Length: 301
Ligand code: GDP
Ligand code: MG
Image (cartoon, rainbow, N blue to C red; front, top):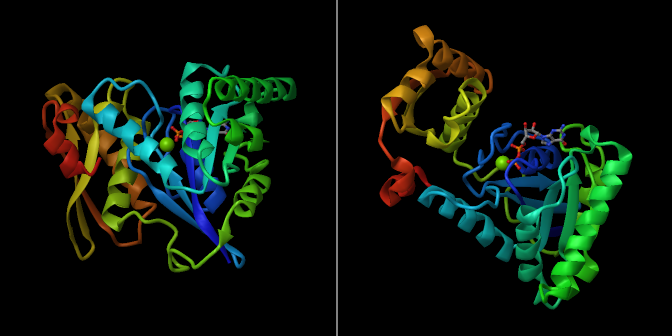
């Protein structure tokens, strides 16, 4: 069977995690309309009779403003070096800009020097929200950006071999063709993961991620970066999950009036867990955790 790794990279919010989930057919990675939702290099595994593809979701590549941001970029950059295929995602509804060029540069640099430089697939996502002319324009912009980067010395061979895919990660349109293109670029080899494994996330981390996803969905704009979640105890059906925030005022927002935010988040998470699970959510203030390396280590970022 054909086996190998494929990294999904792109600016924050272009739909990387949504696309990963769509390609695998299961919710492996949490998503949200807020940028910088993904913090871990999450692996999602696609199993087919003829192939096993290990997709690697990555944090959005952005201009870092904190030690956390620097670590997120390093996670994304590292994932590109160790894979056979790179899916570079751009948004059909937004012009190809400097952020996208930074993403394409990383892909070209990583693939360009290889014996086989043919691993770059450029994906124009969210075509369900774009007119056909807009999608076409975006494909042209992406191609022009790649040619310019190659002319500047970034992986000319990888640019020559690049292919382009318009898709919608939410509706699934165009995704099967993209998956076929990924599989076509892999070599014969032994499977990396057992067939029943769709993600490499430990169960406790998955639960903590689900909690964070719900808090992002329920809380106000300024909070997302300040929230971190960690399962601190798991005994039988009882899971205790700690929610870190940076200030007392944020603690009040996460809890909500009469506890309503925390309650709604808990209900939404429990619906995604095995029946009978008892989920305890606790909010704790830890000032400036985003700035502190030992806090980032403890949280696994
Ligand atoms: P990431 O930061 O690149 O991982 O982006 P996410 O996967 O978290 O998605 C960011 C936002 O874009 C979410 O609100 C998604 O629902 C939305 N989104 C992702 N893909 C599509 C798509 O194909 N079409 C539309 N309309 N929205 C999408
Ligand atoms: Mg993501």
